Image (cartoon, rainbow, N blue to C red; front, side, top):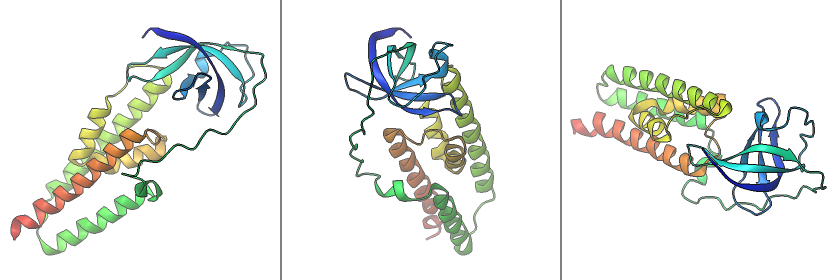
Length: 208
């Protein structure tokens, strides 16, 4: 990971209990991840709107993070960020409580079980894959905080596709991880829909 350039920006988000936040660069572009370890030890000015100079470093996952952060004395007035256009492809899903999807699938599972014999292997598949997803998200969350090597998003999506998505939903909500990235969220919900459709196809239409 090599520094890309020296940039300046202002602090727009800070999660004190987790020790990280985001800087909005003055020259535009996506917000840059800021971990508390990148700040000087004697810096106490963790206030929204505080200006910083920093090295923009490219992480293995392709996103920028701030390093060698130095506070600037110039006053900065926080301004509301322009509203980002939502992706129409999954706009409706943003308003659906994630756990409600698990409840809905439980209803589908029960309904299918009433009309056909559902193999007990399905319980094992969903249980083990969900546990694998839960562990994978936990490892990735801690790796992000500690700036270690991350778990591939492709792996997380594939485990979810084969039946681990209920565990992924639990992990996302409990760890507050992978809940903001639009592209990943869209792909994740696609895997959920595909898995549900495959479950119904295999267990219902095979007997027709």
